[in-house]
Image 1 (tube, one colour):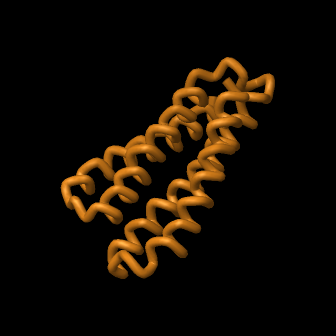
Image 2: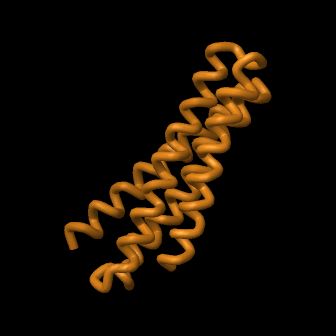
Length: 124
């Protein structure tokens, strides 16, 4: 599982950089200041949690954490959080469809649970 999260984390980090460049260079003239800020928030959390996925992969590579279901669950919640939180913000910024903002908190909760599971795994 550590290799899976390493691969997904690396791809997600690269995609986060690409999305940041796209927002800065491709969308700056097309979006309002408000929607550009929404897009940038998506990028920021995308990259933060891609790095968290890389950390998850490194933890799973350690003998004491290899069998940790908490860390594996945390990794998948980071993936889901990126898709739901950042993905909904990207779509909201580009399309202007406000109801997409209702998806964002679900991704945020996924992030919070993922961090909590990592903390619990560290305590155990």
